[in-house]
Length: 409
Image: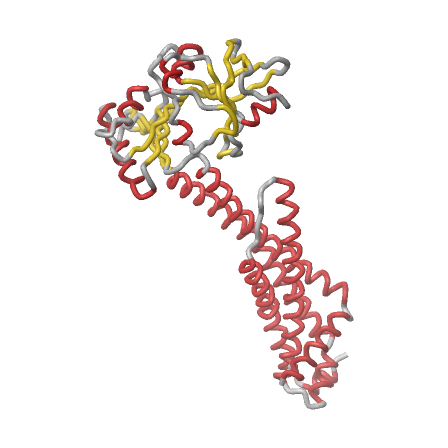
């Protein structure tokens, strides 16, 4: 039995080799489709992993409170703006009697800062915050130290900078102890953060951190109590939901708002991950469906080439049947030929998919991985497409009457 199948496979390969150009063009359709689907799925999975990693790098068990909310305007609902968060909100959330499951609170004031060292100018994000920033945002110091509570109380002109900012401003010099002009005002650099990379759209390594009181006094908008956002750290992953409820209830009560007219937005890492995963998942499905059209076209190409092959080999089929070949043997011959086309296209498509993933990884600086299971599925799909597309032509060949086939010109 095995010998019979081997002989059938050998005959199929010889038949396809005799029509190299036609076979190559047929394989190309499946090859492109398989590679496109593999790359689409790989990109979607890699994007989801990258986004999840970036969100997790923002901090541990983190909640984010930002100003603005959904407001009712007559019969319409719209998202309202304005800076509705204050330092009093942050101080309230730091109170264990109000939010017992909150471990640390870090209010933030943000703007763009014009920076100048001895010989270099640079623009980076300028943040005013408090010492708990390190804990909430899960950051560590590369060198120097972070500013203290006393320096916050004194509105000291001290700054902690990101590693990229340090490279741009001080090159090979040690930044700690250097003088830095921020929007024309002199600050002393006391520390440099460890590198973490980008998080979502923000470059976490290119920023300057100063005491929030210093920010309000030097660069504020005239309201010393307003803050741009409040970052909070829950005690652990298990208490994140309870912390969320405590924060939501506390701010709603303090601002005297309901769920329908809230003037703030509260999100968690899990919510951000789910939202981004949903978006990337939809994009992956849509792009995958578009890429799958290539596979459909490839399958139609296989069916077309097999129908042409049957038409060209009518006399051969009649002769084989006259010599004793059964309809099952003829059907098997053409099915194997179609399967070889599909399998060859699948193998080459896998190779192209892996090569494309490697090239894209270098081009976009993001690891694009294709799992072995996805590759195995792609190979199985390509083989199935070849076999399915070959069913009708094989059946047509098997039904030919020997006498009619031998009479065919």
